[in-house]
Each structure stands twice: as C-alpha cells, then as structure tokens.
Image 1 (cartoon, rainbow, N blue to C red):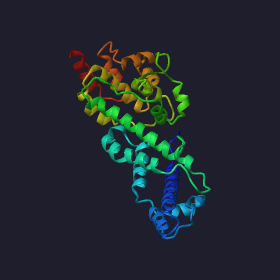
Image 2: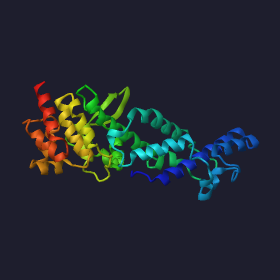
Image 3: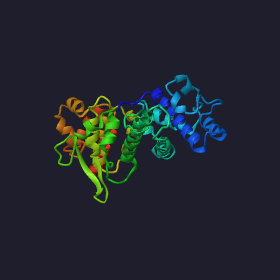
Image 4: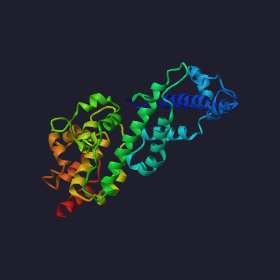
Length: 315
C-alpha cells in the first residue's frame, strides 16, 4: 500500500469525473439536457461520445477534462501533499484538515458511481482498498491520527497517551499490506502490538485498536514508515507542557520513533538492551539522571528534558 504518485491520483479523479458525467447524462436522458449536464461536469465544450466511460483509455480524452479547479481535485491535492514525508507532524492543522479536507475527500470518493453502463471497467478503482484514491484517503486519515496523538501529548492535560491505532492505520502509516500487519496484533501481549477492542457485541465489536506506543515502536523499524518527523525546536519548546511522567517518558519514544530512530538504535547509543529503552518510555524511569542521556541520544534538549522529568517526579 505504497503512497500513490500524484499522477495516479489525478488519473483516477478524472475517471471518477467521467463516471459522474455519465451518470448525470443517463439519469437526465439522452437529449440536450443530459449532454449539457455531462459537459458541465467535465468543463468541456464537446463530449467525446455518448458513454464517456467508453473513452477513458485515451489519455488525451482524460486530460481534456477541465477539473483542476474543482473542489474534489483541490482537496485530493491537499491530502496528497500532507502524506508526503516532508510534512512534519507538529505542523499539521488537524482540526482544519478533518473538517475541510478529510470529510470532503471521503464524500467525493463515495459519490462516484460504483457501476458503469459503458465498457470501461472503472468501478473497481473506487472500491478496491489498494486503489489510488482509497490508499490516499487511508494514509491521510492515519497521518492525521498520528499528528493528533503527537500534538495532544503536550496540549491535553489528561494522562492518556492516545487511543491507539487500528491495523488499517498501521498499514497505511507503514505503507504495508493490511493482512501482514494484522498478524502483529494480539490481545495477550505476546505480539509486537498489544490490542484491545472498542465497543461491545452491540456496537462496533470488531474495532480493534493497537496500543499507541507499541504501534509506533513497531512502525519505526519498518522501511515504509515515513511520517514526516517532529521538529526538534517544536519538541523542546513544548517539553514544559507535558503534564504527567507517563507522557514525558512516552514523548521521548514518540519523538525518536517518528524521527526514524528505532528502539534498537536508541538503546545501542545508550549502551542499554532494547527492552530497557522500551520500559523507560513506558514510565519505568529508574533514575531521573538517565533523562539527560536519553534526551542526548534522541535529539531533545537534555537540560529541558531533565527539568521536566524532575518536575513530574516531584508532583
């Protein structure tokens, strides 16, 4: 489930517009009104044929559709920019993206007809979870979830360290196959990612969530995990806002993992076993003085981080 190139996303958007145009043409009738509606959807003066879906193998036909200034095209472009690895997690405006982009992108994708009366076999593009638009939406949602978790570590006063990530989220973040990711989830703690179920048999009992720290620790060792990282300046500036020892310890792990430092790499630099670093970021802080060493190897301000740990230990 690799991040699709923009040209793949754009091609599927153009195909989607053609299918919508076919729908309005068919639903209003094969007269002047139907044709006018179809041409208006595509922003063209002349339709290439009665069934537009019969002409979608022709790249020139696709490129003739004037869709660049449409809302669908723009929200997809914004989503694609955000999932790229140069977009830092601390810079993501989560609420704005959820309200103005995620909801619209999902709405537009779902609005594309799933059936076609033409010869072109396009419907699978918008149902297959590995289709360009579906992958983009999944990765966009997952990055928003991760950005929200990172930001709430320092803005939320509760001791909760995120609600976790679904297998689909982890697959999207790691650009991996969902089936292979599921194999690493388990409720008994004998898998890499400890999981739990939200809801009951009466409401969404199949919604499996993975522990947030387990998920990110596992993802950090995956080649496809390229979340954009967390700015060092932003992290150091917000250390004083960490509200609990649990969050302060976890913040070190999240910062390291999201910046491509695995548990194994951090532990090696510390002269620790990997299990010790894993325990440390889960609040097993044996000696406050260790905070300086941890901060130094992962790139946080040692003085500020030690001050934070000492403050929270004294509370």
